[in-house]
Image (cartoon, rainbow, N blue to C red; front, side, top):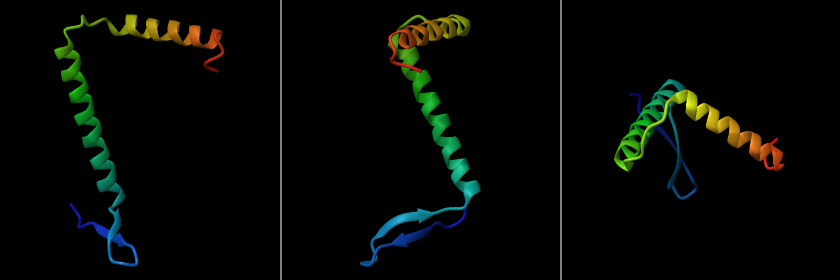
Length: 74
């Protein structure tokens, strides 16, 4: 990991950080992985029955169709 570079205001207070783009993308990927893991843990803990992906896609499509019909989605 490269050392971050800080942007400071006129009083010397750190207000932003500069990181290498590759490091930034790696950090984003790690955060996304953590978020997905947390969501999976929450789903398992909810006790709700899982549904197959194809069924979930159908439900999402039906909801979108209904929202479009109501003019709430383009």
